[in-house]
Length: 162
Image 1 (cartoon, one colour):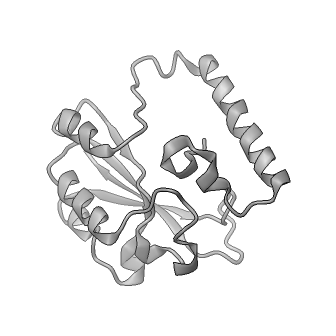
Image 2 (cartoon, one colour):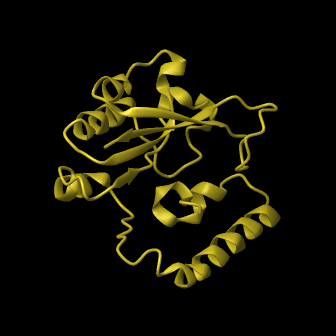
């Protein structure tokens, strides 16, 4: 599923793509949306929230029965500086540091992204020191969901707290 810049607006995600590629991506996205009713039995007790994580953590942060999956914009240290205008929603380092502080007060969450430590930034280390398990999902080539390593070396991670 595409999140399209975290706001379900196609402009950010499709910026710089050819019209043909943009149409293909958009059609694929809406095809997947149309398949959701077929999966409704799986989603029966799941609430999907598209918006700021803050109200979610305020409401459910301490509740271990509620798993919070948080997929923030990539940490700026992990991004090529020329690509920082691709998405509509970007975060600064201070935004990631704030998220980490707030997650340290919560239970039962999953955070996804690149590990800033690979670039010498320790912003996510407090999560690991607090007991979050870091899981390497492998190297993903840009624009794919495969673990091919050719010409691309960023590894995706999950930080998981029970």
